[in-house]
Length: 102
Image 1 (tube, rainbow, N blue to C red):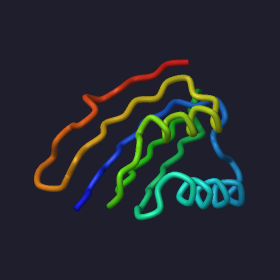
Image 2: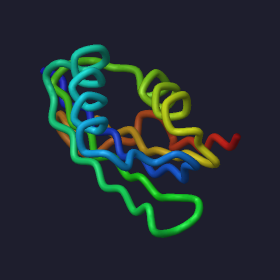
Image 3: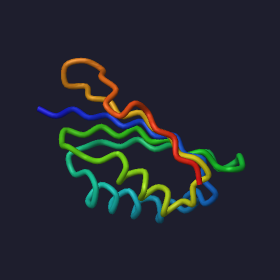
């Protein structure tokens, strides 16, 4: 059984501002990258650069780098960092944490 958990923090220049855009983006994101999952996303657009945080949990394998590439492409990131955990039997950091800057 697979239990992967990705926690992402991104500083972005173009945060999603319209609910309709965000709904479409999340639907496409789930369908194209991770199908058996849940995603929580928080956006603070009052600060500059804006702050986006994602909490992604999946019962299937997925590549955290692919998710970060999509976020980077769609929201013009300044900085993005993440922790990738395997939660099957205990909390094991399987990626060592990564930071990507523009």
